Image (cartoon, rainbow, N blue to C red; front, side, top):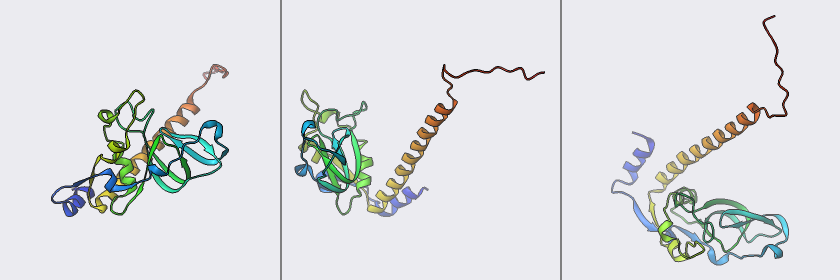
Length: 192
């Protein structure tokens, strides 16, 4: 029996409770501020939109650890899952990304991993795809005991790190073992 199975048996013998997203975290959408590209002053702080970092600006409106979920525009992956980003430190978030912070009882990192699995395709509305605030807040989230969440996060973070290392290895392997047309090929006869 795996550690996760033991934790589930110990802490969730009757199953896992489901809660709406708005009960699982602090939703900070009312604090977002869009700034037009022309009005942005270049700087060191990431400026986030629906798909992640759009620019770097001279000021910030958030300072902490957050999960950002695309609200409108390109808000969905080809699999129908939302675009989800992890953001830390001093950042600016425009009105194209929902922003959430941790609340006691639910790990933010757990929400980060879980939200990437939600099929939001039926929730996307309009000519410009939009995941409305109401639909976002109403998402149903399974909330196991905090110890179970910690173990799930540990497992998924380890896989994420391994995947990143694998991609890094493949990149450098391909870079180091690819010889372009400009490379000079030297053929030698080693028999004699």
